[in-house]
Length: 81
Image 1 (cartoon, one colour):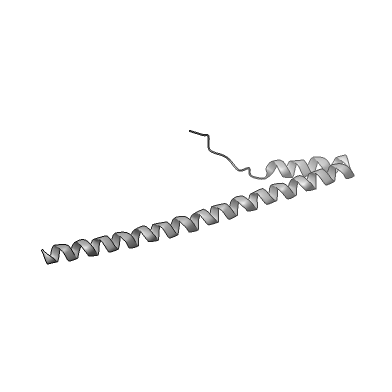
Image 2: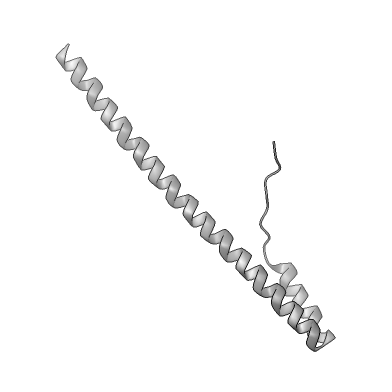
């Protein structure tokens, strides 16, 4: 009986450690994804500003700036379920 109880307690502790490890990994992945999404959003914002400023200067640079903006990756949202 004692051995079974000790094994059960040890298994419970190992399970908690594994759960904590998965939680930390998930949190780190989430933070990196958020940072990447922020970087993409900032690139799109700066490209849009460049395109708008270029359109004020000359039509030739306007087209190139909007092409750069179009080529940047977009954030894709999942459809609501």
